[in-house]
Image (cartoon, rainbow, N blue to C red; front, side):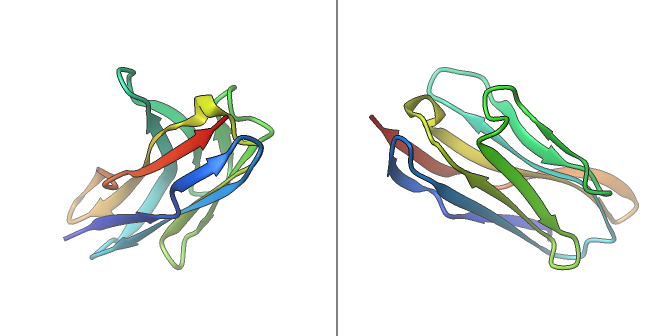
Length: 119
């Protein structure tokens, strides 16, 4: 069974930094995109950043220049370095991955980790 486990969320003051990590486990035969989404209360889940299998990174406008996504394919991990955090970054952050499992590509989500930025 494939699982994504996140770590690194917490409470930080505005202007501070946090690093989120996500590790995958299970029988994975291929890794496509890896990334992070977030969902604030009463809002839809939105893309934060994602990185392709060849390392091309894509960022939402509201985090570009502040957040950095990275991956280690061999270790099946993806990380999100968040700097210059703002109160509006407060949300539950979800790790996302597209893996080849069994005989097809499938989407997987982590359980979510809370990030709270105080003003």
